[in-house]
Amino acid sequence: MLEPSAPSTMVASLTRQWPETPRSSGILLHPTSLPGPYGIGELGDQALEFINFLAAAEQNLWQIMPLGPTGYGDSPYQSFSAFAGNPLLIGLAQLAQAGWLSHNDLEAIPPFPYDHVDYGPVITWRNDMLRRAYARFRDQASAEQRQAVKAFHAANQGWLDDFALFMALKERHQSAWSDWPADLATRQPQALDQARHDLADDIARHIFYQYEFDRQWSAIHQYATEKGVAIIGDIPIFVAFDSADAWAHPDLFYFDENGRPTAVAGVPPDYFSPTGQLWGNPLYRWDVLADTGYSWWIERFRQAFRWVDIVRLDHFRGFAAYWRVPAGEETAINGTWEPGPGDKMFKAVRRALGNLPIIAEDLGVITPDVNALREGEGFPGMRVLQFAFTTDGSNPYLPHNHVSNCVVYTGTHDNDTTRGWFQTEIQPDPAKLEQLQRYTHGDPDRIAWEFLELAWQSTSLLAVAPLQDVLSLGSEARMNTPGTVGDHNWRWKYVPEALTGELAARLRELTERSGRMG
Image (cartoon, rainbow, N blue to C red; front, side):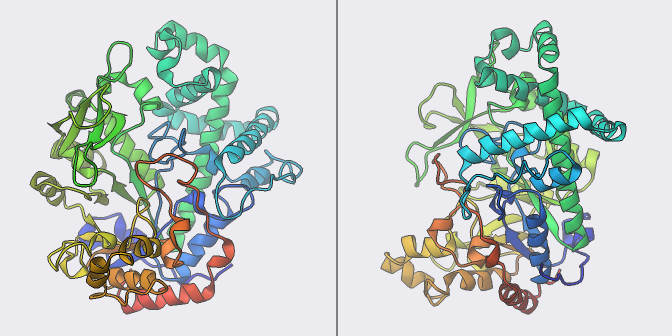
C-alpha cells in the first residue's frame, strides 16, 4: 500500500463558500472502475488504496458519478432512485468481516475479466451473494445489529420505505412500474398495504442492502476526509421514469391519471444532431415543487451532501430553461423551451442547508440566462480541453481564456480518452492537428500528459482529469459514448499495478509546480 502524504485542509475549506477554496486538483474515477476479484469495483480495500494514491500524489479531489442503483444499460445517470446507493458496489469482503458471508461463499468466484465489468454475470453472482448475506443477517443478527439497521431505516424513512417497496415489486413483476397491475402502478392504498404484507421479507432485504451501502460508503468518505481528499459527487437534473421517485411522487411530474408521461426531456436539434436528443426522462412540474418549498430537491441535496463534499449539478442549463417534448414523439424536433425554476429553487436550498459547494455542468449551447443564473449563484462552470481546439484563440475552453471560478477537465466520462480523441479526431484532420500543435507537440504518446499540464497550469479553481488520461490510455478505456446503449459503456476498470509510486511522484511534481497543493 502506498504511503500517503500529510493530510491537507482541503475538505474543511470546501465546507465553506467557494471563494475560500484553494487551487486544487484531482482524478475522476467511478467506484465501478476500481480493481478487484469480485467482478466490479466495490467499497472495499481497493477504494482505500485509491485514496492513498491520491494522497501520495497530492491530489485533493476524487470525482465520482452518481452512486444510485442502476438498471437497463448500467448507466449511473439512469438510476432506480435519486436517494439510494447501488448494492452492486457493496464490498463483499466487508460483508464477510461482519459475519454475513462465509469464506466459503467467496471462494468460488466466477472467472470475471480483470480489466472490465461484464455486467450480466456480475449482477447474477453478486445478487446471490447479497441474498446470502441478508439471510444470515436475518437469522443470526444480534439485537444490537438489528437495532443499527432499524435506526438507519428510521432516519431515512422519507425515501427508504417507498424505495424498498418499489424494488421488491420490481423483482416480483420483472417490469417497469407503469406495467404493474393498475392498482399498484397508481398506488392505491389497499394494494400497497397488501404488497407490504406479502413482500415484507424482500422489503427488509432491500433496507438491509441500503444500510450496508451507507455504512461502507460512509467509512470510505471518512477515510478520504482524514487523508485530505474531498469527494465530488454528481446529481443528474432528471430522474429515470422507471424509478422509485417517479412512482412515489407522480404529482411532481407531467404524468396523466394512469402514470404515463405527457411530456419528456431532451435537447433540441443542433449542429451535432439534426433531430436533437430525446432523453425520455419525466419532466418536473416546477409549479408544484414551488408550492412545497422545493422540499423534494432540498432532501435530494441533503442526501447528496451526506455522501460527498462537492456536487456537480448535471445539465445545469435545465434550471434556467428546459426542452419539453410531447410524449410519443420519435425525435426531439417538436419541442419547446420552457422556463425552469431559476434562482428560486437555489434560494430555497440555501435557506434550508446553507451555502453549498456546487459545480454547474454548463457544457453545450449555453444562453445568457444560463450564465446569469450560474454567475448569480456563484457556481463555477466547466471547461473541457477537448473542446478547446476547434476555432481560434477566442475559444472559451482554451486555457488562456479560463477564469478562476471554473473547473477545468482534460475530458469527462462522456468524452473519449484524450489519447483516443487525438488519434481518432485530431490526427486524421490536418487543420485540427495544426491548431492543436500551436499548444502541444501533437504526439499521441505525450498528448494526455500535455493536457494535464495545460489543465493544472490553468487559472481555474479546480483541475480534474479522468484516471484514463493520467494513465495515457486510448479509446479502449473510454467510459461512455453518449446516445448509445450497449456492452461497451460503463465497463472500464483499471488494473491494480497501474498505480505506481513513479506515477504518483510524477503527478505530485506537476501539482506542486502548478500551485495546486490545496
